Length: 314
Image 1 (tube, rainbow, N blue to C red):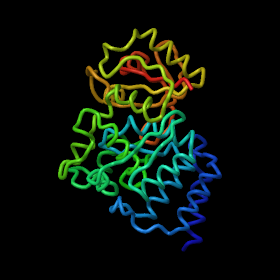
Image 2: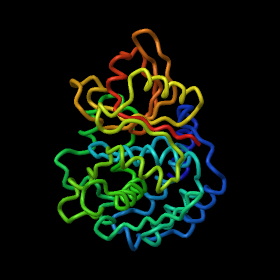
Image 3: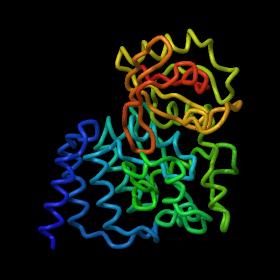
Image 4: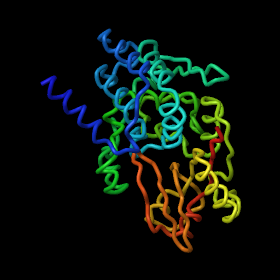
C-alpha cells in the first residue's frame, strides 16, 4: 500500500501542469522530512488538526505552491494571493519554519527582510483549524460548484488542507479587517471567516507589514477611486511586460459575467500576461488555486470590472 501511494504521488507530480510544477528548495524539503521523522503527535495548540494531513498539505505546497486555494465561500482571497506569491514562491525555508513553529508552539515569528512579525492566534481562532466549514449551510463543494465547472475540475478544497487553514487563520487573527479584534467568537465562525479581506486597504497592509513588499497600488474597493481606463490599462500592461507581480481587485460576479456591474470590488486575481486587441483581451490569470488563459474576453468588460490594482516592484 505504501509503495502504491508513493508511486501515485510521483505520478501526480510528474503530470502537474508546467505552471504548477515547482523545484522545491532542498533545505525546505529536509526541514519537512526532519519534522515528519519526529512523528509529531496531535498539536497541543491546534487540537482539530491531523498531523499527517498537515505534513502532506505542506509537502504539496512545496511542489505545487500555486494550488493553494483560499476556500470557496470565504473571503480569504487577499491573504491567499499574497501567501502564494510572496511566501511560497519566494522563500520556502521561511514557509516551512513558519508552519513547524505554528504546529509546535501555537505561534511563529516571520522575518520579512526588515522586521520580525509575530503570528499568535488565540485559542478560539486555533480551534477552527481543521473544521473551518463546520456549521456552514452549504458545503465547500457546493460553494465551488456555484463558482463554475472549471474550479470543480482544477481547484483543491480548503477543507481538505489543514496546514493551509492554519496559515490563513493565523493571518486572519493578526489582520482582522473591519470585524472585531481578530478573534473568533464561539458559534459565529461563519461570520468571522468573512473578515473583510476584500478591502483593498487590508491587502496593502498585509503586503507592507507582514511581507515588507515594495509595491505601487492604485484604486480601491470603489470603482470611482480607480485611475482612468487608459492609465489603468497602460500601467497593468507595462507591469506584465516587465515581469512584475500584478494583482487586480475586481467586481467578482461581473467579472465572471454573472451579473451587472456593482459599485465595488470583491475579489483578487493575479494576472501573468495580457494581450490586448481592438475589442477583446486575452489574459493569463490565477485564482482559487487555478491558473489558466482566458481568451476573447471583452476589453470593455475587463476594464470595467477592475476597481484597483497592486503591482509588486521587487
